[in-house]
Image (cartoon, rainbow, N blue to C red; front, top):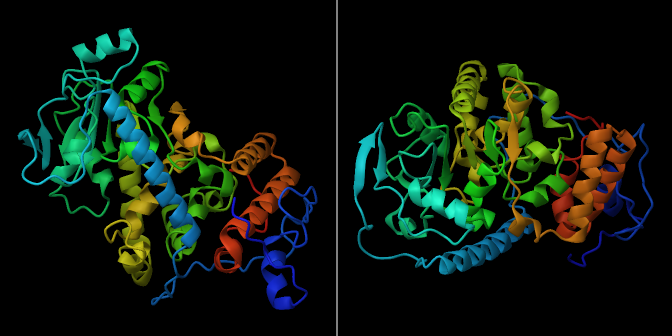
Length: 427
């Protein structure tokens, strides 16, 4: 952890950040002192977000620490993915010139599906390897069908041999990968499949997991409706929920989400409540049954439809603007895909509460958590399970102190008050 410290100067200007966020301004990280009580989780009330988003919102600068952290994680994940590929005899290359290897086997609803998965499989236990050799997950004859979406020809060299590559280069959908799920559901590619899903071409890099690892984890836990994972476990430790994390990555994200939740009838308390790590997810790395997809996809589509119909014109225009990607990390994406990818936990608590979910652990990502992040996540989860407001306050103060030392005063001035609700609630 970085050695930066929050100034505890007596001047009102420097002390304001710590007091607004509920930080013990004189304690070093690891101190046992707690600066807030159960009745008053944070010493000063945060300014309430209004339901109206300005027509010309002021752009917020990037959170440098989070960006550097994600770059660091991506590099480590890439190295891990290359090691796994080497063991399997794959050749993982950077950009290659010329056309991709094999041509598509056909088109359905605009999707180009190459020839089925290669027979070269990563080393794994003999029983699983035998099953995969017979019916690889990328095969259209397999009851488990996993597709891997790519956008450029050079990305095909990085695809997992257990998945079937899916060319999405011609898609211009604002919803990104979500549109792929809708097209697959209506296609013959998933006909008669017991489980299916579509993953990013960066799956190995982001998760540190091979295709064989994923399949083994799914087959070892039968009977669930959806299998998912979270490549960013540090967010489970540091944020109340995914919506709070979104505020640090996309300008005015919470204000935007609040209006959308209000006009669509979604539970607004989900935006500020502490949620369990068990459902924490910020990507669409999901493999699920037809039952799940047939319920989840129309539900999300309905949320977007209601938002487009009921949002004030200025807010609707903002939702479809590229202001969401001010750091240009997502090819100029609008707010829509960032909203959609955070709706999964909300769905599982509402419309999909009767469905069973299994969160796939990611050992490579877990090993990257430092001791403070592990303690913070455990503390938050215990507070959630016991519904202890006191422990929730302890977690919030510890978390705020961690941010102050790791991300610094400028970052805290900009974000800490907005992502520290004045009341401890559990979703």
